[in-house]
Image (cartoon, rainbow, N blue to C red; front, side):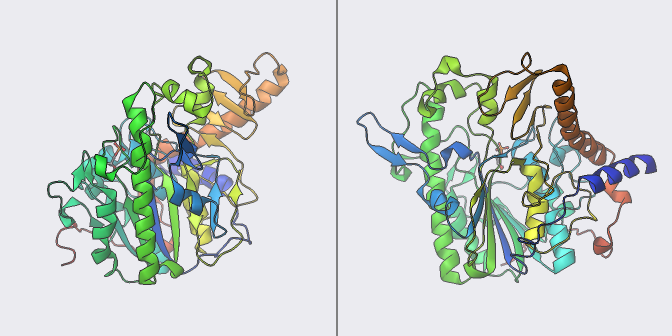
Length: 438
Ligand code: GP9
């Protein structure tokens, strides 16, 4: 009812972080090309894998070069915040600045019916963008087809638009190199400026890859899934590089902003102890604190022509992506009910609430019932004074308010009662995403 909407409205208003003049509009008018790195984890950045003979292999050379590029604003304390909805939660977070639900996938349960104020709808309405999503799997997976029209996507190119013939797919769908290669014929037809999202697939559990596509050896741990992860990451890294080469050749590169982020972890907490030795830990030193550190995923905004890029240490999560991107594109966000905050804003609070209630800040990590020193991993429950604990807990609770407000907004479908001026003329689209282009 109105009371619920008012509460969420007040929270979102309070939560909004004003844009930073230094970055606002930096990528105004450009195409947006978002590359979602399936199961991409931050520890892969700059990681060198050693084989038994002491040879060293850079796992993601292309992504590393982007990560350090002067034209890239990169983040090294950026976390996925997904729950049971996995990849679909990452889409809710990154394109709506809302969280997935406490249980299940919001795409499945509410996607077909709810009102959303998502990136494609906002950019389509405010700035006249054409919007398109690309994915080499069937559109029914995670109910994407049902949800995307409510997010405002004009086009959705799913597996029916690609040759899914023998040898071209691995478990979940089209191999990434073929996916990018075959997407070109559709991208070429999109009116500019466009907002596009490419969901990669090859780096998906359990990371199968044929010998001839493997450029680096597997890792050598006790767990074959962990071992294979490095090879498929490298394959996807090469796929990105090939796509960038095409973007440059086509001329699109220079008037685009390319956003790259990881959707969720690739190695589960259960498998992390196998990974531990490769990260310089003994498996028996590994615990809750270390598992949480592994939830970092890459985030990069690559803006060709910009030259003041750097790796930012700001703490943030996927829910913060949309306000950051919109401000870079010169779109004000104060009329939207977002739960995240622009990562480049001076008002950003550096709070990272997780779906399970854990909350991270740059100095303290609230994990389960403990407070950890973010730097050392030491449990501080007995070191801090009662007063300090109360104060810190208040800060963590403040972070969790984003979850409760988001849950209220989604489960009561509150956006259907709330229409920012810029979206007034939006007409629900009824596309079935069939026969979109020939
Ligand atoms: C499937 C792909 C993977 O289409 O998005 O989903 P996930 O299993 O990672 O949630």
